[in-house]
Amino acid sequence: MTTKRNLRRNDIKQLIEKVKTLSPFELKDEFIKMAQKSKQVSNHQILNAGRGNPNWTAATPRQAFFTLGQFAVEETQLTWCEGDLAGMPQQEGAYERFLAYVQTHKEAPGIDLLRAIVEYGIEEHQFNPDAWVFELVDGIIGDNYPVPDRMLIKIEQVVKDYLIKEMGGDVKTSTHDLFAVEGGTAAMCCIFDSLKANYLLKPKDKIALFVPIFTPYVEIANLPSNEFEIVMIHASEVNEDGIPTWQYPKEELDKLKDTSIKLACVVNPSNPPAVAMSEASMAYLNEIVTTYHPNLMIITDDVYGTFCDGFKSLMVTMPYNTLGVYSYSKYFGVTGWRLGVIALAKENVYNDLMAKLPAEEKQILHHRYEALTTTPHAIPFIDRIVADSRHVALNHTAGLSTPQQVQMAIFSVFAILDEENRYKEQTKAICRRREQLVYNELKGYPYLENQLNTAYYNKYDLLVWAKLKYGASFATYLENERSVLEFLFDLSHRYGIVLLNGSGFEGPAWSIRVSLANLNDQDYQQIGQAINELFDEYAKDWRLHQKAFA
Image (cartoon, rainbow, N blue to C red; front, top):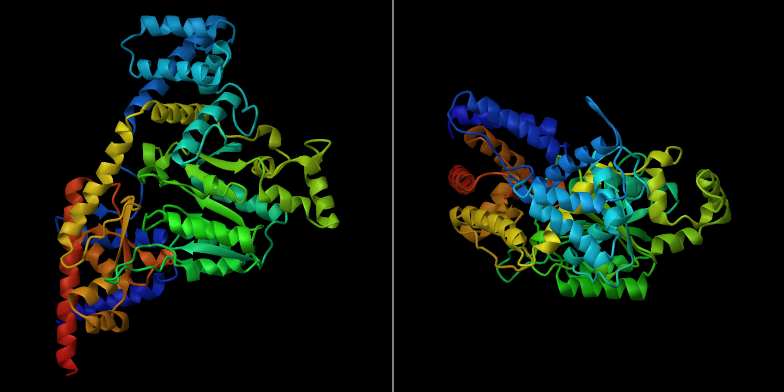
């Protein structure tokens, strides 16, 4: 290696020492800085495949939303119109006025979908037509606090139709209640806050994380106010070629027989492998919980479920134990809208565990919630999450903004009415096409056919690749002489490509994550070429290293 190359390696090693404790999302910013510095001396474009924000958006439901907004403004002006000032919409006759608006605005963007959404509520749920139109109109105008604070009544029902269907459940038998929140991240914060506030989780308690997993689950567990003891349930299964399948072997799931584990957190399909849990694993998990650990609390984060064929969520296969989290952000391209829901069946382990709390803790909770009702002990866990989201004292202003709830309802019914799954197949095809473009360039890294793979992300284990392509000696060299962060800094410095380290998600030490959602198709071919080229260069360095020490 040249002196110049050694100097650059030394610079990178020093940088790694400074940043090695950062989460992958904070590391991403360091990779971007490195790529920007490199861009100053080269012409390459920065390709940031480190974040999961999709580069597509669902257009038609947005058109319906904004057309509804125009109708809603006209509704406010019917009651009071004085220059820039208008009144509040009125319920009586709202449906007939809506139909008249549809007739006179046949060319308005999204008008057909909007009409279909209104009719869906009337036909499928027997909503009073005026009341349904008024909930949508008043909601999009946003002139009232959310009432009920957990979720608007009719909007909750149509969102539940969508959610249960996409999670693989039966809408007719589901008893889930929903709480509309500001995306999946708000859901995580609200849930952990309420688990602690209601003594269902205490500092130093033992929790299980199904890993690899979205990094904040690990970081929340390690906060000084929590310091939970973490049990890792590793997706360590490999096929006959040693390629990870990202499934959980029985010996890993057996860890959940430990009844001192209070909570298990699952991202399904996983992040970053983006592979759904197999039916066999789900059945074995159910068997363990039923036989050994009936009081286990489970949180399942299913944001990528819509990208998986035949997806089944733990929230529908194990509804008693499982609290579900879902975000609209990835599927509909609405990360900026912050749309998500928490879902919990009416009969659940959370309520039952609260009923078994010691008298002293029950008394403290009675005092915590007594300003809300004369029977605070009867407040179910999901409604406590709502209250806790506003520190209880501000419960009267709790709830997701009503325009966000309306947008959520429109996305939901849009997907339900798409009986041929045209939009779903489009989004899945985008990810799978990009996945193949990367694999085509990774010479010697076998593509694993997997129906449970969503292809929203891909995770490549460079040590597995090293063994397959060059043998165990090269893999040993990588482990002992190089680091995955060095590889990622090299990618950003030399090619302007930003990826994330899989180890930051508690995945294999030499794995890297590529988001397949947020760049253009041709960029993924370039990413694959760069990974392959840099990997081969590391192999050349290995050969030189072997000669030097021969």
